[in-house]
Image (cartoon, rainbow, N blue to C red):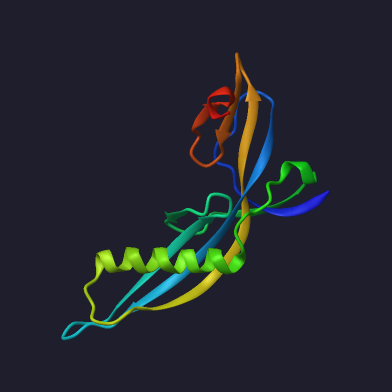
Length: 146
């Protein structure tokens, strides 16, 4: 059995379900912009780096994280290293910030918090087998995913 950090599930199927845990690296960053003739700007940025497909989602904050004890076969292994995830999060923050602010200088970016956590995907059966995203509530037929 493994102890892992899990993002708090918001949605759960109404029928009995098993689950698989999908790896993410969460970052809270602060961007500092210097500007000519105007006050400096500071932004907070929250990045959720997918450690399997290597994409980034922007969040409004760091979701609550719980500790679960699970079997090893319920946990997906990450395919991305911590350093690659950190670089991807910084790149995403830089691009997002540059869409919001015009500055002659590259922003200074500080990582305030980072967490490795798993997103829960519920696997359940109604008429057919489904997978449900625990954060959005979206459900997909397994046969469509294969």
